[in-house]
Image (cartoon, rainbow, N blue to C red; front, top):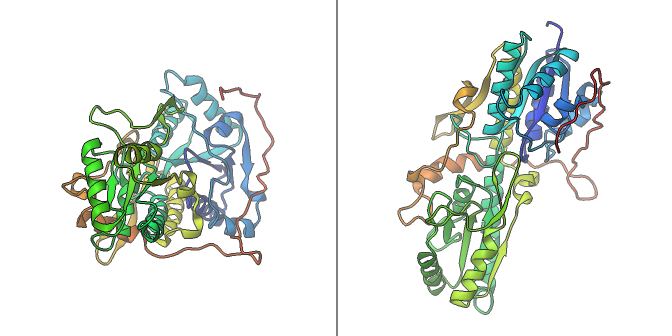
Length: 419
């Protein structure tokens, strides 16, 4: 193997299995005698030349990394603009790569990150620096184009379905004399994949969730209240799952905080309390609500085995693609069989993935707009199958790891970026 190092960075919101991908990357590279550096806090660390030397991490720590949630090396929401607008930043990244003999760069993130990876590959080519860039898929929203599903989604889908089933039993127990309504808000800004996964909890008619509110379906207040009232009259209570990206007929978010993140995404302020207040005010029902938020994507204790296996597989393939010189590609998951469920990994051009968004198909939403179809179940069910629980310590807590994260010595002048 030729000399050179591989740089790995995590981007955007993390998942329960993103560290499984990181572990696969480091393990595969070690087997090929390629040292791996990891950028501290994503692309920000790469710009600041804050590079973690993963060769200083023990084999035991890296084994534990596979089942540890969060982003072990730190992530960020920092968007590089166009090459023309952010030329200095792109040139800085190439300078850092040149200074540390980085020949391969693996960027683990969503569609914005795929766009960044594509641009870095273009700049490296323009500057005559031999850098192979591979995007690595990750997002709980499951909205990446081309790939059948996204590593991270299967586990949040499993968590959501289990949480709805368990909470539904709780609410049902109290519904005769207390709570009539329960609303759980799930992630998914523009795509209702996580909301749809909640529908797996209902194995037969009348089981929760009774209503699912998708971002792909405009919210109709009168129709919603009528359905809640009818459901309570029929089964005694109503459990609702609402996507954070729920919009009204005018396209406005029901709960927008009025701020935006670094990627230009609106910060959403919580749709569940808005809906709960509406139910209480208009129907008079006692209504509880829950906002799992980070709990959804960090719940490694209930991770899907399918998801964990796919997260490892894309990491392994990413290294293999990079070392083979396959530039500006991403390993994606291809479903080869529905029953029995089978899948494989293939390479897809970043240009087909960058800045594109895969929404929930219309055929996955029932005609009334409040549930999932049989086709949605066939797609979703294999993704939550199997358990991949972490080992537990004697004190009863999961045996998660925090890495040492020793930085390599800087070789360039300090570089300031806006926080």
